[in-house]
Amino acid sequence: MLKARAGNSVWRALGAMSGTSLDGVDAAVIETDGESIFQFGETGYRAYDADERAVLSAALGAWAGERAEAAASVVEAAHIEVLRDFTDVDLVGFHGQTLAHDPRGKGTCQVGDGQVLASALDLPVVWDFRSADVQLGGEGAPLAPFFHFACAKYINAKGPVCFLNLGGVGNVTWVDPGKSTPEEEGALLAFDTGPANAPINDLMRERLGLDCDRDGAVALGGEVETGALELFLAEPYFTKMPPKSLDRNDFAEMIGLVRELSDADAAATLTAMCAAGVASGMQHFPAPPEKVMVTGGGRHNPVLMEMLRVSLECPVVPVEDVGLDGDMLEAQAFAFLAVRVARGMATSAPSTTGVGALVGGGIVSKPD
Image (cartoon, rainbow, N blue to C red; front, side):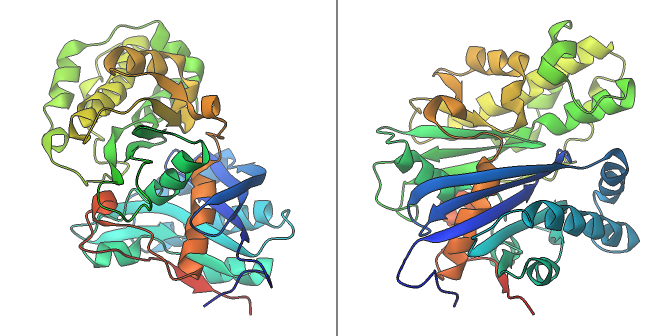
């Protein structure tokens, strides 16, 4: 088992995240013992260029083969480039890039070899966080809830709160900060709410050659097609009890539902679908949250945020309102989880992924 720096139980951990929106690599340092957050440190970002994004996009859905290998090379090189600029770090948490996720079928696939990073950075690297959970019957996602529990304690939340991450796919963590640990029964409930930015981004690239609907500018000029929205909400996924998770392309047919609409109406309708999926998920919470704190790229879309405020029966705010960094929260989460793996602690539970018992995922690779 790895050990923290001599005479100190606190680790200075560096986390990295490359999400399904395929925009780039987020990197962030936190100081933690894997239970509490003591301090947030420096952050970094390395965008994928158009060619790299094309390689990653072409590999989505692949489980192996040349496309997956090409994506792994892009992911490893980009991570090494941004992570080598950090100093005074004890270990790295490396999520990799999810290409495919089918927990009840083939499993889960995140490309990027932690040993390659460990050798290049001369640091221990914790990676492959999801596989053990899936192998033991869990969904393998979401994995940030244990970190969200620590965040709720960090901001001194009193009643139940909700962290809503709007990346390529939406996921939510309901937290009762009155519990002592994330493992305690009733402390957490987490699941994927539905598609978020991925279909909107795909629509923008396909029709307008844009990476995203920046500031919701396209959706703002459109109207929601209620028939398409009703068809979307009729999907069995929304009535399925959590825990539950999605692959980025599980709702790929959403683009088909808006195929005949104008650019603005299509963008407005896909944005409304994201908000409606979140609102539907609220029915599963054990108790209403005092507030919903939004992280991920979706919080920058004022049209989406307003749709959420109208749909949800509680305040909806970006996580910056409580002193957190919504661009870096997932990278920080994998730094936190890396410390838990290094300490032999659980990283997921029945209430977060549906796994049968507490699981500590992750492989530890040490420098050559």
